[in-house]
Length: 495
Image (cartoon, rainbow, N blue to C red; front, side, top):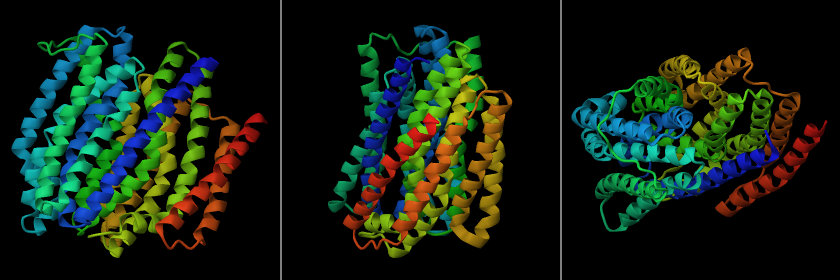
């Protein structure tokens, strides 16, 4: 792997990370407004439960699966337009069929996912209505994911990574109308806004595709060996790429039996997902294509270099996030969310979930490297098998622990199953000699944890009495940690 290629890899990862960060900042302000308008009660549960369903299909049938399956096949066929047209046409047929089925059976789907809502009169019925409106978002956002996959194949990452900002901006606008409408009316406005944002995202990406003179259009779908192979891989990949989302959905089912728990877990998950999105998803988006090229050239040394470099850099940033969120969970939620309808009880509940779930971050980060390596080697089945085992373990923990610890059973299950999945993926990579973690990488990660824990211990005793002190403490924590961690990394690497 040349120096120029390494620099390009870093540039693309940095660009995707920045755009994802912008999206998450807007998403954070959206969550602040949702918490202010709805609190963490009935209406919040309805919106978040309904919003989770189309997001699940976006992650499973859209972004995750297409990036792992379509891009390698598309690249292998020298970016054949006819192949892309056929896939696009089949995708639209499948999406339309899924949407119609869910619109018909939405009451059953909502009852399966949130059975606890039935105990609150009218809550289940209103969730069904909102879910039916929002589910049309699936067609447009999954189609947008397909267009994004094409652009990514041409190394056009920036616009694609910026697209989620549109959804957050539009939802923020809808929530700002809360001063003029009743909360229930705002709920319906937000549902229609979600669908409209999908249409706009599709339109923008479609125009960019056309600007590149790419002849993508709907054609009569043809069942070819390539399509058969793609759908077979897609079916397998859906389970593998959707492990985390599926565990969250199962957790929603269990948590729905405790009032407010769906909202508590949503906000804790958002906080934990923020650093992972900035670092882990950016690494995963770019790393798979570069590892695929190295494997195609039988350049295992290049594969190992990319893996170790990505692991060291990503863990350098993830580790302080783990310790920082664990120590600062309560003040962060208090000073960012405890306004309007939000209560101190909700703050404490969300903080407890964060303090548990945050320990899944290292496993999630390293699993990205393992799974992308396996997908790049054309091994789709192993990630699926590990996901099925992990999901079964998580489901057992949810159900078994809920009577004892309530909603905290969900973050506990996520952490345990996440490390189990990480172990199984790592074992599969090592068995096939697809990964080799160098000693300096291990020592660097250990040093990052030691430094972060030492600084976190000091941060624990800092009195936080207002939002400015909170931001100041976080800023000082980062300013001190990052240069020292960088020097540690350079020192260990040079040995």
